[in-house]
Amino acid sequence: MFTNKIYDCQFMINNFVQRIFLIFFMIAFYSCEKNHGKIFNQNDIWIKNGSIVDGTGSRMFFSDIVINGDSISYIGKVSKDINAKKIIDAKGMLVSPGFIDSHSHGNPFKTPLFENFTSMGVTTITLGQDGTSPSVDPYSKWASQIEDLRLGPNIASLVGHGSLRMRSGIGYKTKPTDNEIKKIKSLLRDDLSSGAFGMSTGLEYVPGRYAQQSELNALAKTVGEFNGVIMSHMRTENNSTMELDLQELFGQGDHSNVHISHIKVVYGKGIERANEILNYMKEKRQSSMFSVTADIYPYLASYTTIGILFPEYALPPNNYSNVLKNRRSDLLSYVYNKVIIRNGPEATLFGTAPYKGLTLKEVSDSLNRPFQEIIVDIIGPNGAGAAYFTMDKDLQYQLMKDENIAISSDGSPTMYHPRGYGSFAKIIEQFVLKENIFSIEEAVRKMTSLPASLLGIQKRGKILVGYKADILIFDPIKIKSNATFSNPHLLASGFDNIIINGKTEIGSGIFLRK
Ligand SMILES: [Zn+2]
Image (cartoon, rainbow, N blue to C red; front, top):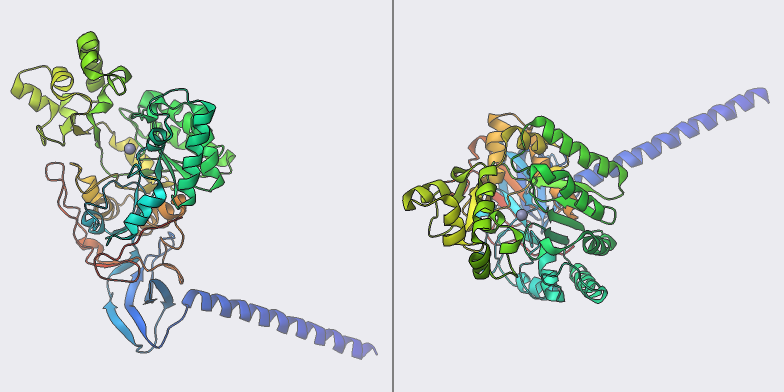
């Protein structure tokens, strides 16, 4: 009996161990299957012997990748010759997900191929920024028109808060009625149901600047219902009011994911100042059920309308010629002070005619008139776009290193600023290789899975089985961002092998819906 019992017991233990082993084996087999995926009899693309930087931030590894249709079907060593329509030898090359730009500008009806973006490795762009939707139509109508275009990169889009204000009849009002709030919320809801990824605000511009916290919070609740994101060009971006700007956004962050567009601190300085802002964001993130993120472009000059230098009383809906008649001298001194605090007239570089390529200082010297008169009397608040050299290197670099801040371009095919042509290439060329600010794995994460997750873009931004095949195959040494402030429209070079939605042909992008 006794012996038998021991035997029984041992049998049970053996049986137990066997079961555990079997379960372990099944899990291992399953996860192996999951990682490796399937190789078919006929495959579309076989990328051989690449160094894979998969977008998650984990260490680079050597592998083959097989693509079928628009998706990655297998990751792992392919031990025998397989049938593939196209074989790409990636020996000595990096293989990464295509870059995702969370803040982009441009008109897909004019430049559907967006070569400026694809040439720097960007396979998905995000339009509808800074409060302005790409069209005055409902999102669903605009989206279906985009779907008919032959696009270079994939396009995701936000709905602009300023555009919603115009469509809802609120326009430039500071205090919308309850009915108007109902109207703007229902327009937003329709647009989010049609696939917009969230809402953008441009609180430094008209009409967004007329919105108050209660309106923004009401809209944030709607965005939150759709698990979307509010991407905000904040009210000032100025050093002295940065905390107030953030507070306003974080109020919305009680109801929705919030995101700071092109984070910068105008005339702020130093690493410590950056850390204060990062800590402020971190506190909010830790106390919130929603995400708090930002994006940043790797240049120390911004670019926007010259309207940014004007006070509210000189902006629509106020009539500018009346302002000139009644308050010209106030306006001159306002603009004078504003330009001085933004590093002076040599720090404003015009990007539009008639002074394109000249600084405000150069224009002022050549016309022999004070710079504030050039802005007020000759140009006016809608008369130009310009680059502004207002950012501090230590501060901006410190922000850029934060793990929740993605790389973006904030650029367009036409803007007179190199960021629309160079940002993503510059990260590899300068920030990874020259200055060692990021590892290649971290840089790629900030350009792929991070922007995908903060926007809620599914199945892109990582190299994983089942993910869409947006893939770059490149030699990092050859990546060059060629655009400069004096020659901003030079395409980046080195990304010669780009796969978008499993295709290598130009024009394979699609319109993405959330
Ligand atoms: Zn902006």
